[in-house]
Length: 449
Image 1 (tube, rainbow, N blue to C red):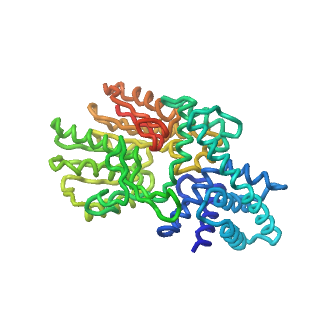
Image 2: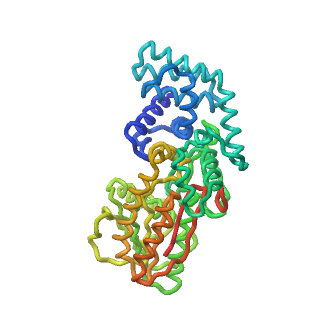
């Protein structure tokens, strides 16, 4: 199975770099336990250290390696440099098996072995440089040439993030260091997988200043691998949303209608339900309309909803969940109005480099272009959806990125859209990895108007 895991890791890297797509590289990969952990760690670890590995490998190549050769070299070099529990000879043997499955010639196999041997001879130096650089930056030391390779970002991305909300050079560097150090998340599950008492029987409970229900499972194959049920910032926003709903009922609202603009497979919905029904049994009628342009995502949401109704020890008799396929670049077909609207918008994802390191390589190579494209989409979604907010309603806008245009820029735009409805800005939260109040969180922005 190990050979299969390494070959699947190679294919995932190939998929990411040759047919760029964020977040779908493990689709169709069905592994269990330690194999899943190893697969995710090889892929994420290689991507997290891509620039550094590129520098290490190229220093031992007399000619630029071909595309497929590059991917085998980088995934193998990552294991040689960063894995203590896997002997070098095992990495060499597995790399040869992957090369044979790809169809490398004998000369190519010899080239692969020669470069990996040189990497192994210098692994201690590479590891030392990597660790000392991160520690120097963590302690606020002077920024030096080559540090961008260790942080795995372009100069353009570093400068773009400095202009983000509450951003500074120091904040961004600490953010990037922290995202390099956070253990790779090898699996994320929706809450209903934990049965009657969500989050009660997890292997590890983790205290969090912002997410009271945050829990994690630790894997056994690779040091530091994590299976997480919801993320810290997702838990925070879901808890806050649940409090707003409870408050509305307490103030006398008879029925609450919610529009979930980009519902996906239901992370916000089920995260909110955990907080909403965990300690409240006197809630009134609640209608949650989940929209997304992907029928596949909504099909997963509906399936999860059926699981929740069966497995959760909660009576959902006053809760109605509807799913509607809709692209919010277009007007909504219904003229319905809602008490709450939540747009967890499609974004550049620069706050999620720990679990999606491919973003730094893909969108991060020309970050201004990516930000402009997604900010235009966000504005259109805000413009179309805000028409359905009641005059006294509340609008939640969130993104897992920290660029200025996608955060405070959209807050300002939303304020203009809402001005005619006499809704004032209420609150705003910015989370930078490496900074308080949630140094281990993802980068995240939320405003409620």
